[in-house]
Image 1 (cartoon, rainbow, N blue to C red):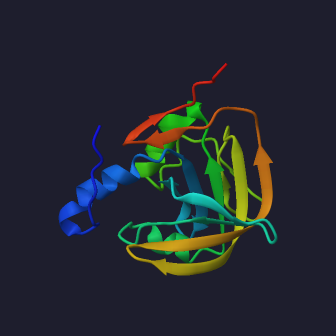
Image 2: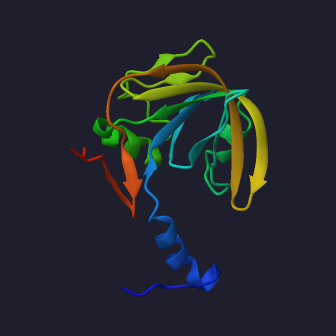
Length: 166
């Protein structure tokens, strides 16, 4: 099989996106509380930044109608979705205010928390940095919750889970 090499430019944007899709990521839903009520967004741009202090980051797209609400939020919660939560992840990818069908609770920090996630990180806004067409939003982790389960994965535009190896 031959290797393809290119320079990321507007005319190679599709090839660049395809190359990025080679990296499988976990799926998260991030929530916050706004003046209008609870707000959520599905994202796969999530990673640990620091152990001391405990910092995480995620990157909302500047073109998202939900961008400003999250960048300006004092607190937010990152939910790592289980492989059985595909419907919820897809729902919040398209409808950030659609909490009517979700049995959510309010955290101690006042953010919406979603049921059944394999990990939940309640965060306080720590910093926000420019990142091209995204913002790099860093949160200081105030509280963590976990449960057993397999994570929901996103790769090459598809959702799936892990196959356990013997």
